[in-house]
Amino acid sequence: MPAAREDIRDFLRRERAVVLVEVTGAAGSTPRDTDAWMLVSERAIFATIGGGQLEYMAIDHARRALRMGADAEPMSVPLGPEIGQCCGGRVGLSFAAVTPALASDLIARSDKEMASRPHVYVFGAGHVGDALAMALSLAPLRVVLVDTREDELTASTVPGIETCLTAMPEAVVRDAPAGSSFVILTHDHALDFLIAAEALKRPDAAYVGMIGSKTKRATFKSWLLREIGNPDLFENLVCPIGGTAIKDKRPTVIAALATAEIMTAALIWSTSPANAAKEVSR
Image (cartoon, rainbow, N blue to C red; front, side, top):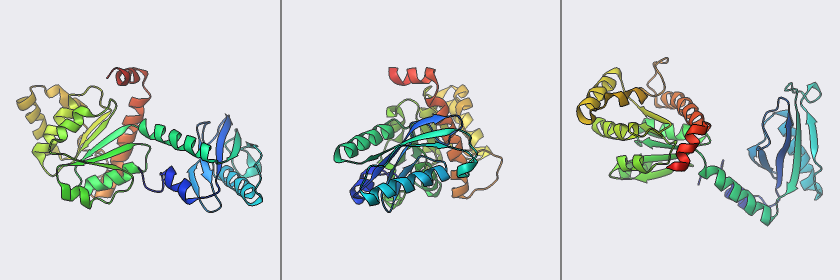
């Protein structure tokens, strides 16, 4: 499970009195829709309903109810100049004290949402792999860091992600769910090529990216022709990851650029009705 910033179990275990704030209505231009919710205690919050002043008002309203030991009344907030926001819409909010039964429901809801997140497999737990896994862990994705080297995985300090130690990373590609993204940056070019080829064979992959230079890109294309006999697969490969507009080889910069690229591809894939059908049929 993710670290404290996402682990609802830790939050509910740590905070005794908690109020659930939910967006029940969103008319016009609003920061979030009716799927947004947050938890508020006297000293902490979990998740967000967005909206700056709107969220501040919701937190203050919930905490007043906690201090008074009373139920918080619903709110209907116009997002205009009177509260210092210019969205122009209106947001309805409900407030509910979190009981043990509601806590169980929230945990189940959170687990279901986590399970439905697009999978991203990062192959290679080196400097760039760790930086990329860290950046991806902040997004609504299920991140798996894969390596053949136990020491590298053990040394990784990225919170909130899964790790996979395997002697056959290409098998991880074959077993991944439809709509997965595959990012390849291992310590071995031959292993990179093997994993990339396996990922490119999957028409239901949302993204296949490999770290590399122009030389590595050209070498891989020749390798595909020689070993796989299908150079057309190469057209679906993103290499180098993170684009070419910024010439910066620092791991954190590569990770930031690649995360936006991967997130975009994953969301486009997951919101396509045709791809949803592929996922069901797999």
